[in-house]
Length: 326
Image (cartoon, rainbow, N blue to C red; front, side, top):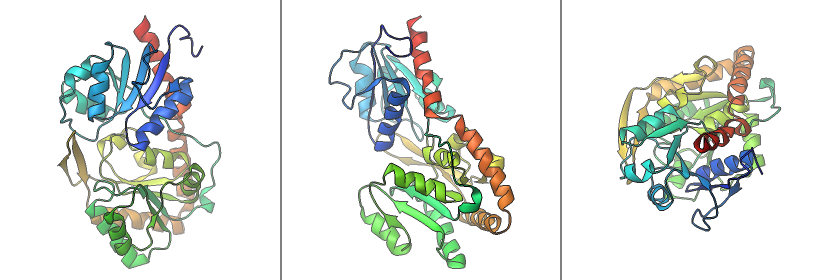
């Protein structure tokens, strides 16, 4: 069959949201293992890779199958609240960052190893000379559009206008979408964006404007790096694990604070709006006067992101199952 594991059947499944399902689909494509939306549909497998977070589905999957048969590939954006420890310790827990590993270990969950998320790495991208402006895409939640990020954005628009700022609100339309559009009329709402549209957005902008103040990994900044974009971001724990600080514009953290959800606390990395505004202004000046440095940074980001090609990094799951069979 596939990857020398012909005696064993492996499937891949996932919880919500769509970004988690995309991770599962990439694992499936990289390994050749079948993707099943419903992990309980049939139990005709030897191992399952289940991608999720600390929600109730992880507890249910962890406790419902024989021990050491489910690789729980789990993310979080802060300390865990739900009582997952016994269920998860029945299985093999893997996280995408050392930051997430620490969050689960603080809850008493044994984390077997860290396997980073994989991304699509394009073979060719547009040169820096053909790119302009800022790009960002996210659905509305507070950590994706924190008030200090919006303050920085609002001040930048007052000083320089909104030309070159390309922000897309995605997901189901909520009242907040319309509130943001009223405050920032240049923001666009569309769901979904097609894969080709996403590639075009990454490949046509100089800077990825990462307003988010919390991530368990941060797929979008890494994807932007793969297209040679320069990332403007708060320098919070998860992104430190892959972002080359010398090739991007990192903003320091002012303080951390916790937002309580049903299943976890979100660890927000609050940054100064003045610092973020200054970072945007540095980017603007470089775009006007120093494309040579931006070209070097772009190549630096491409090289760093190439290590996260999903076809390469997700082979670690094949190696993990081989270890379990020894």
